[in-house]
Length: 235
Length: 314
View 1 (cartoon, each protein chain N blue to C red):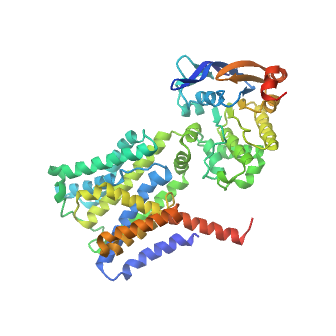
View 2: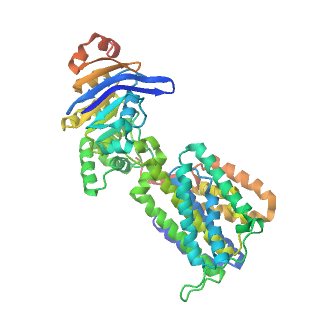
View 3: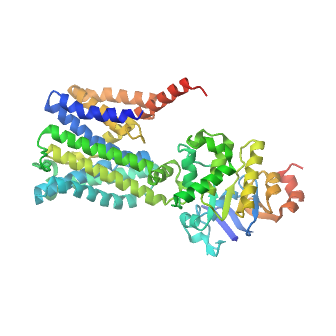
């Protein structure tokens, strides 16, 4: 279980995230909703160790306190972060991008097995393994990005806005793949602006505003919530 | 495409036999030596994406290690050369551990300062290095079994041998998981860290390899020329090497070698013009940056891609 309590992250004197607490329980797919600048990406970066959290913040994962570990040790603990904006190694091939996801695994047969699994999840990538990742379409790049995170065979996957600037049809495909990943038992923490689509596949959700948590509850409840409907669904 | 390296190697083996006199042969040999140094710079710059300007400092360390061991302690070329490389590896590791804490332009400035310090130490430590006077009478490579390296021709083949080994080693490195790791760091440090790469260790490794190759080139340089002055370690040398890499194509395997021969060869041809050569050089460089920003290797690659797409439109 991932349990974040009183997480505060500051950039200089600016507090991007203030006293945020949430948890992801075994088997769950949890979504963080919020507009641009609400602090979603900062939370992700703090959890995966890329941005230091302020004193007093606690990030517990699998019995360990993550805020004192290096990003490398955090990857080893079974947490894999797929950063926002489908960040890839653009000049390296799709195959190399994916293999780098299994960086901490040195068993060739195991890497091959994971690769086969990712290609099963994202068939369009099969034919493009030798192309530079930067040459792919937006949707395919997102598949590479998610695939690379999966190559670490994580126990929990952090997906930061996987649907950003993708065509609606592709968004559905990517989120369907995320749901499929979750069904195999991998815990998922997802951040989205696309509230409706995300709540459809999530178990529970948290709503962020200006770096604070303002609302949380089961996905079905949030979908009916006036505040959420007004802010994110234009209804 | 796979014929090209073999053709280049064949040419490299035949050309020395056709050269009209020793002078050209010596230039060719120096070209090989500088190409090794350029390949070394390419490891940290092209593979790991860090612009190190301490390069000729390590060239100087390798050169002076061999020169001083030989002239002060009577240690042979064949021991002095690896000793110089080892010294560069150790100092490269130590210096890299500090410099690599800075990033981007700051790293470039930091390493340039390191390069200047190394140069100054060599120049001012007169009791050890004889300062401006330099070290003279450095013995060349002694014979290995029946093979003697006294002739310029033999030394040119020896330099070629080391260059080929260097290029082969780097090509193995590029294809290895370590090479992939370095390229990942070059493309995006935060992303590499996010997949579990120890970014600092990767960069330090590249810096150490790069420094070692500079040391190898420096040792060969000292042994072949027979005398050595502090200007071999000055920052100008670093910028020359950088020029070779940029003209040839940063990050490509053959680029630094081709770049060295074109720029170094051109500078020798233009040497008759003395200071005017810089005018021609400057102009050629501006044109190159404008029309071939990825160097010769980059231009060749895009030409090849064009031809392929003409044959097979997709």
